[in-house]
Image (cartoon, rainbow, N blue to C red; front, top):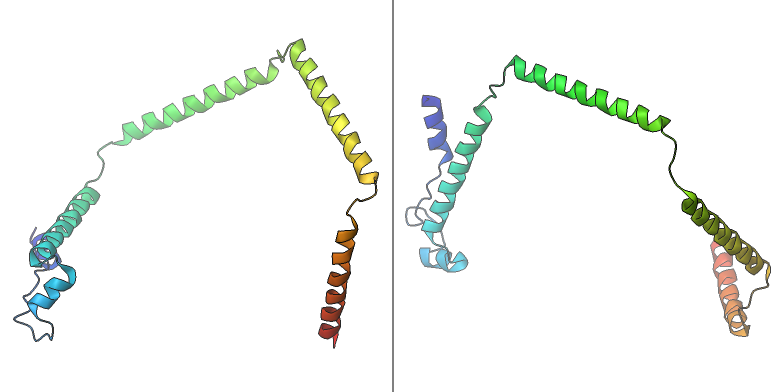
Length: 154
């Protein structure tokens, strides 16, 4: 207990007045810089000290569950895993129950996919349609690329 009280007294930092120190900044200039005053800092220090004390108290308290609590928890985990594995096994042997409409929808999706695939193949076989403006711009880009490439290889 004596160790804790010495820690608490060390943790609390009481700000010293600027009059007792040999600082080049006066009390009024310090107060005008932040506008809080000594009481704000003292209050913040008290809050920090309280926070650290509460944190130490919470960390120091061990749980009091005992072995039976952990054994019960382990049994609950094993029961849950067993039930889950049984459910998965039952579901894996159950036949699907989709119905005709599901297969009809699937067939429509397949037909749409094949149609889109055919369209893409036809478009890829058609010649490009860039226009003459593209080729005019391409020539200047080609000349610039050759110039840069030649200067790099030199």
